[in-house]
Length: 359
Image 1 (cartoon, rainbow, N blue to C red):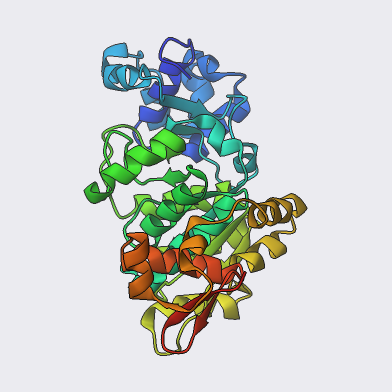
Image 2 (cartoon, rainbow, N blue to C red):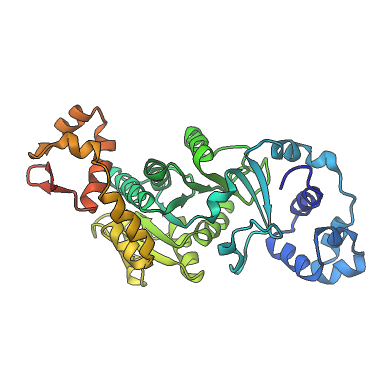
């Protein structure tokens, strides 16, 4: 929705009413034919639906000056307001128990109509957890899924990086207004996601990061996705909230197991005990989703042009350090790439920390 659309200002005014959330907005839209009718209604019509305080607030005249900053933001070519009544609103969100009535977007809204898959996990992830997240995301993106996560540190960041490497796209659902990036260190990552994908927020411009915002944004992460993969999570964590919401929304839930001695494996083990699918490779996810076209894309990808890294490996076993030197890559980036090839059966790990190309 552009700033000059006749519905834009009323929607911004509705979203700005203090104490009026998506549930109340949906109640109003269920009882009035359109957004303009809500503001044209009488106090007597509004009060039974929203109470006296909100009814009075809705009767205040709409002041364009109060929304000037957002209207100016929406004038940018990659900024959008997507509302419940918009035909482009993602159908996958419509059947949620508490769908967002409005979404602020920065990037390409069409990305939300692609098949999305969520990867989430600990902000304080281990190096191995980050490599796993990047590798899973890379393979799933190459197979035809677009990765969605929350732009947080740790697993989220690694998943976004892997998704961008896999298909140049991604979706980040954030807990702030889109005029800021949290954490600030992910500013460059956010810009790359805007260039190839989209940033999504339910929160108005200027909204700072607050603890209560992140559990709320999690329902959108899981709601947009066909399934959710959890990689490293403490027993009481936001990632488990996302997994619980995903299960309630009818989405598939997956978890990567770990050592029984690792604190960040306990949340994943808890999910597996509760019925989440234990996964060891991206193929486990693709098969469980039961989308034949995904497997076909993955098969075509495996039969395509030779991978430059595999070409560099040659046919003899090689150490990680030697291959990193040959490829001009950091050990961390190379480990993630090798793990992706290992999951696809292209590379084997040999005793002594050596790697060997299998074909």
